[in-house]
Image (cartoon, rainbow, N blue to C red; front, side, top):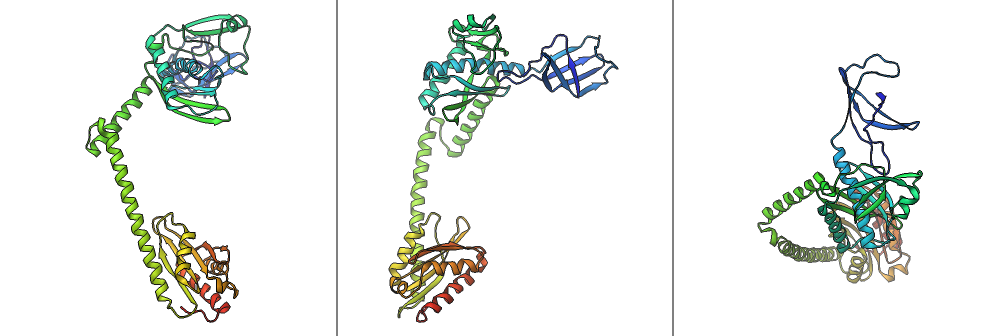
Amino acid sequence: MHAFLLERNPFYLESGGQISDTGRVVGDGWAVDVTTVRGADGRTVVAGPLAEGSLPDADGVVEDSVFAQVDPRRRETERNHTATHLLHAALRRRLGEHVFQAGSLVAPDRLRFDFSHRGPLTEEERADIEGEVTGGILANPAILSSLRGYDEAIAAGAMALFGEKYGDVVRVIEIPGLSLELCGGTHTRTTGQIGSFRIVSETGVAAGIRRIEAVTGHGAYERELERDRLLARLTEQLRCRPDDLAARMERLLDERDRLASEVEGQRGEATARQIEALLAAAGTNGARFVSGRIEVPAGTDLGDLADRVRGGLGSGAAVLHIVYPDKDRHAFMSVVSDDLIQRGLKAGDLVRASSRATGSGGGGGARFAQGGVGDPTLAEEGLGAARVLASARIPALSG
């Protein structure tokens, strides 16, 4: 890494949200890529690795002239910075004068603007703000830069950043009729050089603080180009015209919902058949112990399922290994009839026995309980553990 103090320095040092420049310093037979710009004792230091040749032996001042070249992406940064001023002004006009800048980032590929506001922007507000910025770009006024006394600039209505320290003389950036701000950053010569402006996102970052991220120029163009490609893919896949895409999607979503409802109904019927089969296999004479595995769809309410089992159980207890095939999840569920609860058998005890046998845990009340399945390959052992406990408490249990 090599560092320089240039007699005439074109590289911007990060300030006011705008990131530092990058570029190259070229001398006689050597070149250094500038990757870092920093301040030191009121001067700007540029630094970076050697890209070509070898540096001359020098201790301190190099008398030879050098060529300092800022990366052309500075132009994109300037587009984003000038657009930030237009955005700030548009937000205050559309939302109110309570809006103040609360932070920003100005980079070649995007801009980020934090501002004070009470809640999310509506779709209408977002569209209006984007439209106002676009109108300022199309009007194409020249960007005016001037040095003024601080008090004079504030009296003229210039916006200053809260918490920022300013000297007696400040730089004022004016977009006639649109914006007046104190700013030391780099800007386009006219607003038309911004090209275009699109809001990418609007989110909350803290209490009373919102954040807009946006793109301009080539970034906005690439974003629109990607949207066009996506639209072309969708219309090709759905075999419709772009104008018919929304209606086509609505029909597909309606069809999806209808089919999902039919599938859920069929799964519910399948679950009911599984319960009936387990109850039938446990016999009908006296108190019954029912155990086994049933598959249920994701989202099944185990409380409702327990009520269905209790309704068909009569006098008895049931411990079921519940499987959700869609999510590869497992659980234990148990129910006990009221007459057996009075004789000392509780659903929570049965589930605990089953879950522990698989390396998990569970519990619940006397009538209904549920628990985890640690190792699904041990689910049968878990059901067996519950059966042993139930037989020990109620020897007359059958099934």
